[in-house]
Image 1 (cartoon, rainbow, N blue to C red):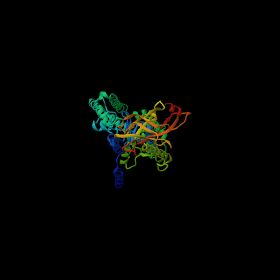
Image 2: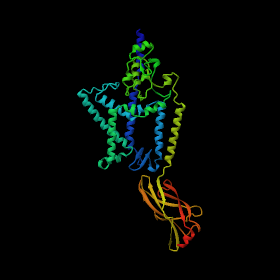
Image 3: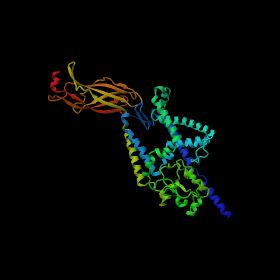
Image 4: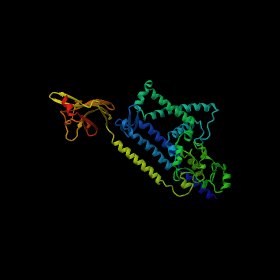
Amino acid sequence: MSETATVEKKSTKDYLTGWIPLRIKRYWFYALITAFALIAPWIEVGGNHLFLLSFDKLKLHLAFVQFDMQEMYLMPFILMILFIGIFGLTVVGGRVFCGWMCPQTIFRVIYRDLIETKILKLRKRIKNKQADPDMSKMENKVKKVIAVLLWTVLALIAAADFLWFFVPPEDFITYMAHPMDHLVLVGSLLGIAAFLIVDIIMIKENFCIYVCPYSRVQSVLYDDDTVMAVYDPHRGGKIYDDHTKLYSKQKDIREAEPASECTACESCVTVCPTHIDIRQGLQLECINCLECVDACTTVMGKLGKESLVRWSSDKEVIHQGGKTDYFRPKVIGYAVILLAIMGILGWMSTTKEHMLLNINKESRLYNIEKRGDTKQVSNAYVFLLQNTENKDHKFYFDVIAPAGYEGKIKIRKPSAPFIAHPGAKKKKVVILYTDGLLIEDSSKDTILPIIIRAYAMDDKEKIVVDRHSTFVVPRKDIYDAK
């Protein structure tokens, strides 16, 4: 008898030895995400950020490459990667994004588990998220005020961090030094912080249940191989039938199913942040935080048994149909689509123009004038050039005429290269001319297709763009009449 007890005690000890709760792993993951979110806006390579969508300067920085607003065609691809990535992640791991990456969940953990529970002791235990603090006590009221103040400071930091992806941190600090000159920025900061305060302190997990549309989308994406928190009714016993609770006590479960292992301790229920009972089966409210898995692992581990709530799939636990298939056609399809979009985005990023050039021809088709002994035909254009690099460049143009007319169309104005500063738009009136009449046609004006090549004098290989335009040659009789 004593030998059996010794064996059972040893197996129980061995079962929990070295076990690290998923909650602790999740906290470490939260810390990494938070550190990345706070540090990323400050990282610059060549003056460019990892990601910055600046409405102030009309710039997009992506992977340390700067794009102008005319190149905003990249944004839909970024959004597609974001949504398809989350959908693909849901097919594989359920609402793992909600439980492990969503800012809403991270902020609630910081406020509820860190501030209210660990720091202020306003809540008794992290493992009991159902019991609200007793606010009839003055001591708890004071702690609540302190908790709100602490979160208000953190909400302002979180709001500022969010805005840093739209206003560079260095500019943000400068702007905030003169708040009256930047009321929109100040209003955005306070508005976002106010939302976070109301959301995290008052709305709480109801945001995940009723507001967030993702909970409604997830059910369409799930299949039997989707990994999530699953209760094993074959071992634990059937607690619910058609969402109706059948048993609340262990003896009642054992009477119905003698082999049932569920102790009816309801640790998996009290620890749930969205207030559900995982034993009821798949529910929209489950955010896959896996706190119920930790709770059941602790209880059953002390009994020397495997947890009744596992991070697994319906195929393995409910249907007992073998191992989860992670590389099923649906998952491969999402991966292929995601890689294809990322490839297109990468290719389009490499084709970015290092200068922007718009050419508009003036309303007057041409001008004929005598210069010395030569009669010249000129066409006028308005060039709008923008240097999208981070340093000054000296620009000029070449004219590429059709075959047979090479070198006959020349630049009169501007007569010399000019400097364009980073991000600045440069407007130039450009006059092209030709000596004499290129085409002798008395029936109509002739339109010659030309190419305007603009380039940086100091980097002709990299910074160069071609634009198609036209040069109008007058009728011969009009030319002769001048």
